[in-house]
Length: 379
Image (cartoon, rainbow, N blue to C red; front, side):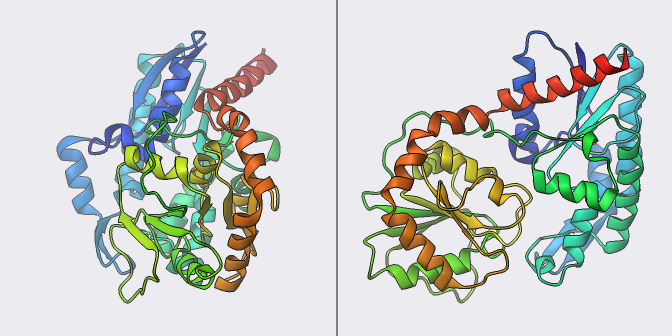
């Protein structure tokens, strides 16, 4: 099969574009000997990219800084569409294209891969609770325009790939996409992750929280919950991810803040944690939960978005109520998890299953199976 792989590679991030998702999937596809891959880079670069970023710079109050929203600009839409059409002209024999975004229309059967659709993103932006935690860089007018564009593009496609059942349901509900066109393939542990044994980073038993966006990921609730269990459990809380903690946050004893660490160093903490806790208020997917499970670590999250797709309550972790802001509820779940030796054993016994499922080779295989099935049905 001749397959196109379309991605707007960020020249500043390279392989780290979209948190290593495109490069991880591309490498898995390249490992499939039956495929002949055409890498279609639809991303801007050089002076054009610099100009586009400057044209769409605005001040973002949530981020307290200026940021560029060029990604959802008419200029970027025109450019990605143009590059997609050029690729079709240069490689007219492609059987299908897997794309890492809604880059435009194509005569070749195209299958975008998404974690959240624009109508859902728009809903989050307008939600008074979720909107203050999600760092949306774009106005409602811009998001509405892009949602309309995405809806028109998706309506022409033979299928789309979703990272989660949650995103698939929202796409069907908000975009009126036929459910049979939406194929849930989830995602794999990304390319920068390694299962190679790492030394223990600290001697104490510890709970791990990871999240660059501390408040959106529920870090404040985790800190307060930990404060109330300190007397009962001889355990440390490790906070990783944010470049800085919120102003005024008072950390209790036995909390270690390690900041934003390189993945190689963070692997040590995943491998040796007693428990991973991240009750995120909004999570498009959450592969970090898969990373914990793949290391034999039970998980506490929230019964919302795609998080229940990783965690079965009482089996491999626990789920807070969807709208809960209660540190007491979370503290109870943390205590239950720390005392539940059967849960820990269950997760450790199923590590091979988790690693097999949360692999990009499995994702690539599932995608190609869908494309082959659709191509065969057309013949």
